[in-house]
Each structure stands twice: as structure tokens, then as C-alpha cells.
Length: 462
Ligand SMILES: C[S@@+](CC[C@H](N)C(=O)[O-])C[C@H]1O[C@@H](n2cnc3c(N)ncnc32)[C@H](O)[C@@H]1O
Image (cartoon, rainbow, N blue to C red; front, side):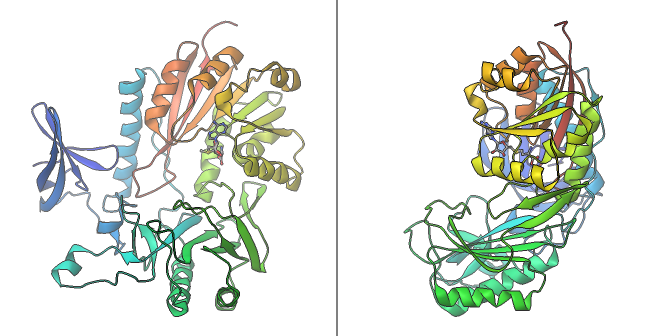
């Protein structure tokens, strides 16, 4: 079948009259042989078997794990084409799901770095590793009780791809990964499994700064072990780049790398990253934009779309560690950030002080509780002139949309990592707001993800 276009989630699309076939991993311009694995009335899902004619936009993937990892599902597609296709997906989603037609769609902003751009990676230990089709063909077997360290293969929680090199992070990250894996193998202590909740080795989290030289390594196990602590400590002599070396434990049964007890083995407890003229202190569990250089570009678009005169009251919803609040603080009268996670609010307050910013305040609370239009908030901060909204993938709760419509800010800048929920929320806001323009921003080259910034202005007289 001939692949005509690319659907959301990096699936190649082939059509037979009204019937659509989605082929995972296939690219526009390719003619492929694919096996149907799921069939519905108007569409089917298919698995790519063979490329019969190559696409002119195909690029040889640089990563040896490309076929099994799934993280960089577009690494084999020319970067300019990746941008174009993501931009079209944003426009098409806003039109189809949001009924939004009369706005300007700006060409997607390319990432400053297209490899090595991620500043954080969480690797998991597993007793089993993913085995490739080529290895199966060669009759290679893998140990069932091994020490593997890498990224989970799509949909498999018991197995990891035993990562040798990940091209989304700086090369030193892969070197530290290999050294930690060796410590685990030497220790002979077992790897933790979410199946029986037994075992020792759990996660490795590495954070690298891109605008400073700071680097944090956090090794996570199920309990503290003095001898292991010594072994981990030796990493700092092999890798002088490490500025924060932590050894953490967690009793959490889920496969989420959130640590409870942290012991500092070398360096400082936190690292400092810079965005624009601002410094941000990041601790082990802090949320921070994963592509630092591109975060600056994203925030510059926010600044542009907010169109400040200098006196505005700004509400920054879902503010995380206050990065956007601080970034725009020089240009506005007052900024109030709202965030549900206590540690993020603490980070935001600490970062305000660190940067000598005096016009930002942060409110801890769940925006689903219709927090914004309470008498207390309005009496304390006043009604907002501009709202910046940067929700999680699920978008806004209907009660939050209702609060915004009640508060009627003059302008809204909506930053979204999910075009579908952006379309849904903008459709609701459309009763009082006009969508002026949308700027897709590529924060995650080679992956199917795309960020978009939307500018809305109030269309009714208040
Ligand atoms: C996409 S992040 C945005 C972070 C920040 N704007 C930045 O650029 O770093 C979304 C944030 O929303 C917060 N959050 C999610 N649901 C929330 C809710 N119901 N109320 C308040 N904050 C929420 C998350 O904790 C997270 O920090």
C-alpha cells in the first residue's frame, strides 16, 4: 500500500476509497507491505512488514535501538518534514475537534538542538531485556534474572531496552548509565520487579543542564546499603562533571521514579539551570521543562503573545516551578502562579528569591476546585488582565474553563502539549474569545510530540 500522510502518533496513513489503514512506523512516500492486525468498520491498524519503495524523506536512523524503543518514532524522517507534519497535525486537530478555522497557523518553530536536547532521563532497572527480532533469529537467549538498565519497551513493564547510547541526551549520560549498570552487575544484588515487589535496584535519574555545566545523578534502590553507597560515590571520581550525586530509596510499588529518601554522596543537593537571565534551582523531584534551550524559545513566544504593556495582573495557571511566571515577570505588573504540587510551589518561591523577583506570588491549590474565582483570590490579587495557561496533557477541567470565562481576562496565552485537549478547551473558550494565532513549537524532535502556543483575545465587551 502507498502511504499518503502521517497521522498523530507517527502512524503512516494509506487509503482505499473511504477505508483508512494506519501503519505504525511507515512514512509518507513509502510503498509498504503491511499486515492488518486490527480491523474496524472504516479503518484498520497494520504492522509494517517490508518497505517496497523508499520515501525521498527517509533518513537512516542514528540510534541502534530505533526499531524497538519507540521513543523516537520519527527519527527516520527528515527533520524539516517532521516539523511540517506536526504543524499540519496541530492545524487539522484545531479545525476538526475545535471547529476553529479563522486563525493564523504559524510554521512550527524548530528545536535549537535536534539531538542531545533532553535535560532529564529516567532509566529503569529490569530483570529482563527486550530481545530484537534479529537476536531471536540468531537463537540468542537472554538471562531471566539479569541486571538490565534502560527504557521500557512500549507497553512492557517487566522488560527494558538495555540502552547503550541514547541520542536524545548528552553523550556523558550514556557513559554514566553504563558505569551504574556495571556497579549493579558487580553487586549481585537483585533487580526490583513490580511483579513480586522484591529486589534492590530500581532507577537511575540523570539531569544535565544545557545553559550551565551542572549535572545531577540520582541512583534509586529499594533500601539503603552502605557498601553500595561507597560504590556509587566512586562515580564522582570517574565523572568529575557530576555536581550533584544522590543515592535515594523508595518504597513506592509503582514504576515511577519518585524518590522518598535522598542521601547526598557528593556535590550539592540541587543543580542550577538558566533560562534567559533567570536561574532555576532544581532538586531531585522538581518538574522542569525537558528541553532547556527550546524552553527559552517557547517562553519567548509566550512573552510575545502576552503583549504586555508593563502593568498587567497576570495569572499563570499550572505554573509548576514558576518558570514562566519568573520569565515574564519583568514585563508585567504582578504575576500570580497557581499549582497543585507543594514541592513545585516551594521551588517557585525559592526561585523568585534566588532571582530577586518581587512581583510574583504562588498559590498552592487544585484548579479543579474552581480556585480562581473565589472571593479570597480576587480580593487578594485582583482580576487578571492576562492569563497564561500551561496544563498537563489532559487539558483543563471544565470548572477551570468556567472560572476563566467568569474572570474575563483581556488576553489568554494557552501553552499546550496535546493538540486534542487544546482544541477541546479552545472550543469552550470560543464563546467569549477569538483565537488569533497558533505557534507550534517543537520541544521533542524525532518524537511524535508537539507543543503549541495559542493567542486568544476577548471578543465581547465587558
Ligand atoms: C505542563 S506542566 C507546566 C509547568 C510550567 N508551566 C513550566 O513551563 O515548567 C503542568 C503543571 O500543572 C500542574 N497541575 C496538574 N493538574 C493541576 C491542577 N488540577 N491544579 C493545579 N495544578 C495542576 C502539574 O503539577 C504541573 O506542574
